[in-house]
Length: 288
Image 1 (cartoon, rainbow, N blue to C red):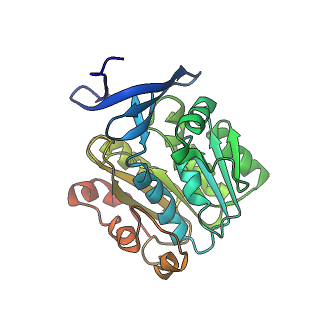
Image 2 (tube, helix red, strand yellow):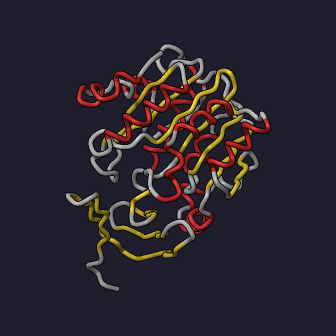
């Protein structure tokens, strides 16, 4: 194999991220996208969908800590959690660490992603066969519609999606979030991958605008990830009842007995402090 093999994720037409590849572990094309798993020199195993970096062993804990533990420590008693997407398994792994969670339903549209991660990235996927995890290969948008029709309810919904392209595009619309609202219990909340405040600020503003129309409490919080364009990324937060700061009982973090690589009570609070350039664009839609 060529010892100078590199992989480059290009963002639009003005920047890119290059990483040294030791070997390709898997390469396939599903009906939705191309799926690749490679072993890199500095970041361990890496999953790419359509050439875009989804997860690396080096920094996956940052994203998975923040999409999971922020909402699960805001809601006082999350028993049923729904994950839309999350094919690498890292979000489900973190969800079921919370002892009070009785069921974690995960709906991923692309079975190839799940199978590739189960075989090659067990660091994130090793809990997908846990008895608390109900894995469904299917369309998350349609699943939420079915939940609404059946009047089934969840306490927390996590939309662990890629960017709004390909199979993830319907996850960025008003109808989807209106149905998310209906699928939640009266004290339920939703957290979603919220894009980059530097490079996708229009989409980020659109997302909080959509949440503003559906939820009485809307917020946005940030995290830093080495392998996402720009480094600084966000999650959106929509809630029927609980405020992410005022209703955050930090004593539950210590009482849980859980250890984290990124998340802690100080980061929980601090992540909701937005830089001014970002706040100016979204402030009209934040409420509660």
